[in-house]
Image (cartoon, rainbow, N blue to C red):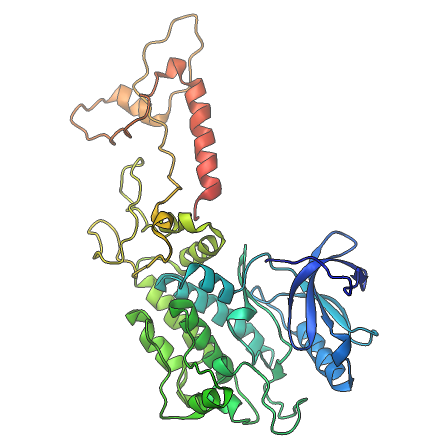
Length: 423
């Protein structure tokens, strides 16, 4: 996550947290990168002195109470807080990564497979929130952080209890993000249900897949009219065909027509598995993809190698325009956006160590361990059996009498590749 230096008006510490830089700001507060006395990084949110009034304190206290209640692997956890301090503050887990909005603007939309993984992950996280009788109520791309351990949901400042019809806002005032807001929330309907988060998640997934939201207008009044008008359909331009049915259902005008959050998880999972991958594999690809440099994207999106392929075979990169290969399961279309230089992969799997049949060793030399494969070659050689092709440009493998250095080099290559592999 990008930070900027502290200004002269910024405090050096608050609540025992040393402030190191600015992360972002909103209408009510400023968010800093902080560090606890024990060295734990934290996102420290402070209400601006100019808006510290009774209403702001109540809303801030509600956010703290929500964060004390909510839990889950996809939620940024509360570390400490003080709503009664002269300058109210709270500290949450620091997520080292950009928000979804910035990532898409910088690198372009995500491939369909990764959008489905994102949808299943976030829907499952929201499911835990809903089980606690809570709603997020302000889900949007800026509130999804793409951290090293996967996406996480932040900012429960507008979260409410499901059954609550009370509001801390003034009469006839709607609080939230209009472009990601469902019609019933824009119309001020109370009480709200979990369907509001399903709709908002639909806007997030549409943005992840296309780079735009379902409704967009330069005038806020026109935008509210588009959102609340049942005859104005959401703009799904550019959405991959396999995502359109799910997005259409999630963005239904009527809350009762939308799938439940559990059904969203199931549908995302089914679409991923239809492409020959497990959801856990797709999730690891998503995490690696969002954390990788742009030039590594094509390699990270490579289709999985067939189980019976030779060990030295390198997986081919996925080609959105090509049909599925006969020797691997079909994959969803994946498009990598960026300049031509970004389409050249820089990660290459290290070729496995090549071994040849061991030559007779001298009586005085210690006997080197013989791999099982080499033992089979010694006991039952088969000249007609196909052998994996030797990678071009590589030095032929030495015999086992002289391969100690080769084994060490091969191990280093394997470790280097494993450190950068998608999973």
